[in-house]
Figure 1 (tube, rainbow, N blue to C red):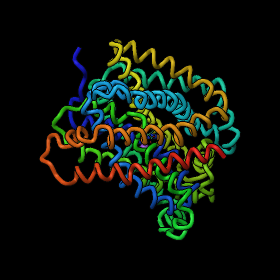
Figure 2 (cartoon, rainbow, N blue to C red; figure 1 turned 180 degrees about the horizontal axis):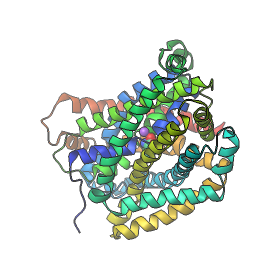
Figure 3 (tube, rainbow, N blue to C red; figure 1 turned 90 degrees about the horizontal axis):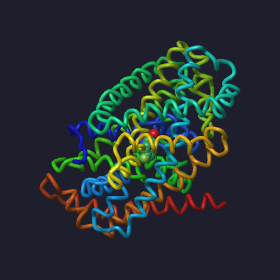
Figure 4 (cartoon, helix red, strand yellow; figure 1 turned 120 degrees about the vertical axis):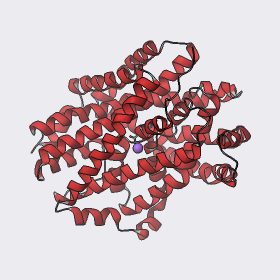
Length: 433
Ligand code: PFF
Ligand code: NA
């Protein structure tokens, strides 16, 4: 059977943006800012997206488009089967991320209803503790996963591409609306000040902790290190400029993360909540407390959590597609059978995270701080040292050559290798102590 492709170039870009834009931008990003020194983190994060994120997207793109395969099969197709363990790291990471990502998304579904009825107003903490684990969490994890499975079953053009063409513009519009609303709040001045005034002193004093957090967030938010961009690029024809695409994707993801900050900090400062020290639940508790208090909180809460659910969905389908493409490419499975089967396994894998908060946090930390940097580091080494000529050649396709391509390879071999490697070392060290 012929392998699937995207119908349009914009469909591919939107799918990649849909993957990038997710819980990472709206749930994880503001609390990374809060934990790591406010605007000092923002500066470092923006630098990481530009200097590491964009070149790293290209690392995955060249592997995917060159091989036209899933992340494991890609190594075989490139004649480097010996390195397929790298792809296995990617697919395993995908399993783990998806199994807890859909648990968070289940909470989000719960909060859509909770905002509409005011169920958590006045008892934000008790409400979160009640719904976050246990029977309800398992059921909503299953519901969200079922929707994800439904879309991926329909395939690349009719499933993923159609879905993201509706979802990505909707996310952007809803967030822009919320940002305008945030302008009307009392906390807007303090919130913006906290978020935006450049803080070079903190940056200089604490860069050894800010750097790995910023690199980690850049990888997570751009869906890097587990083969999503390999898989999506494997459905691309020859005629596109990957260089331009990677820049557009990073730009859109960054704009959306930045917008989330413009929404959340005014909201939190309006009720004098500190942009806390993070934790999966604190976001829901803090934001929930704000919606209970601010003008139009009920409706703003519903809109906010619907936006978050849509963003999570367009990311979840990309993770599922990585695993499904492996079973289709390598074992000739029917897409529907593969998607359903993987969905069942992911459901079971997520149950421990939905039942216990401690387990949930282990899933989140091990993937975010360890597996994604590890996967990315291995992919970078592979492109930089095992197949550098093929990678350069792939980048050049569809365009006349330029010094930019040579510069990219040099940059990947030096700055990207060192920065991702250093992040990995610091993360492993952080785990050990
Ligand atoms: N980029 C997504 C987000 O920011 O929410 C999360 C994610 C998706 C991470 C896919 C990794 C991944 F492979
Ligand atoms: Na993101």
